[in-house]
View 1 (cartoon, rainbow, N blue to C red):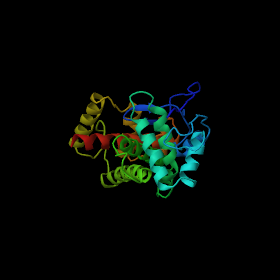
View 2: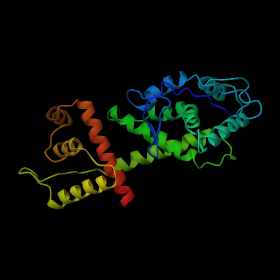
View 3: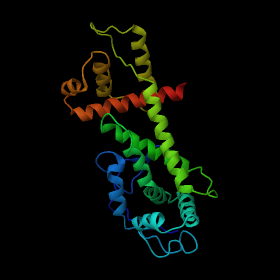
View 4: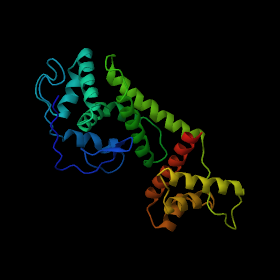
Length: 260
């Protein structure tokens, strides 16, 4: 298969896998799947006829055309042949990025369909859900047996399973955070020590929290301020404050999960 990708307008994007950005789609505003499909539809890559298997695709196609063919015209054996070829390309040492983008585009509607059915407290949560869906999908892309059947649904299910696991972990592990004890703080000192230890561990692991993240967690977790009040104190928007706190808490939870 020869996916001809135009990199001239590519800028660092929001899609990452194991710390490696998938930059060919560029960046977008808001949660990944709010803008991904529109950007995907604009790709003008050439996917030659027969490059994915005998007679597949049946003619030269762009990524959006291939997605439609896969969902609306291809039978089940053809779908598996297409997926197997894309997965194989995504595992190459060189030139894997277009295939990963292509794979995510073929699965995006299924992944977004799950996300759109989730009850969320705030739109900011969707950004985390989307990244979890994409991570679970791309991780399975690296290991799934291309000789099996129903490849597309299995990959989508892997993304959904990972996202569900992340949300379940957040629900059952409420986070209490603190910084230096204040005159009004009633939390025991060991909580403060634990938090300071976590801050150091995160920094040592190369994923430090910013001073603003620490302050935000402290004033909402210790001082009892609302996110709105905290945002005003820090001079940032309420939605931005919510997202910062959510991502900081998620980073700590992930660290604790790997440490245990």
